[in-house]
Image (cartoon, helix red, strand yellow):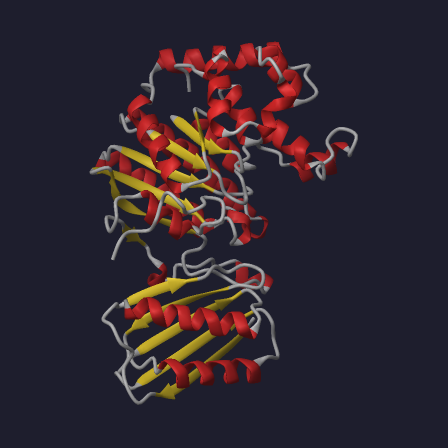
Length: 102
Length: 304
């Protein structure tokens, strides 16, 4: 298992007031994403556990793109990966952010 | 915001959380040991396998048509919904709490291949503890209803657990057995059971077969609303858990093995049950199938 953690600063907090959301399932080519509104409003942390080692740079790029698009300030995001492709990861991250905005 | 559309949501396609949310009265569910507590498997990291925050099962309390229920939903896509230590512990804990809490019913949304082999001792123990706990819940006067229609079916120890429930609802996609198709083929050969013959699998383990022989007590369309309707009916109809019920169950199972023990295929069983055209059963829609079931004596019983 490889563990990766990325921290970013955002210009604004994620909209909405939902404290927690979970989406996705740990299955082949899929992943689960747990979002918790527990950080200062301009901070975001994304922690990933993946059985596929060696893709740190791809994760870094997907996460940076997501943070730039969604500005998910205040949210700690935890990921259990089942070997998802980068596009699936990006979609799940945006789906999770949308759930928190509800 | 309106609740999830339970008339359109496919049970087979939905995740455990989607099924549970759509099945219960909107907004009524309270989860115990939710994903934020991160009660994950202590064993899977040893095998370099990914974990799930809820260890593949969602447990908690909610309301069904205004009545309090305890509920557990297995996620069939995470490790085939298999029982590990934490997964099993959550189900056993829920059942034991139900003995004290006395809800109107306990609902178990089974979707499992059985025991998780990476933590098999803990998983086997969990199966045994679950069966014991179900007996205690039923003895306390609370019906336990199993709902089966998921991708993983209900196999291995899950099949044993299903056998201890007060009542079972199953859909076409659901399968109930102990040894699964691949297990039988591996042990006895393809001549005994060809696991790649999907039609054979469904004729011998599928929802329609289980309903016709009385193994399941309701046959559902593949929608959450159909399972909800079945759950409400089965809760109202659950048998008492007493000596008379267990004697009746023993007699029912003895008669079943006497009558059908020599049959080689589901169609032979259905013919003996008096189904006019056994070959037509797999293609029947729910309405026609329910009419067929109504003419089969063995499908309705007071046992379990």
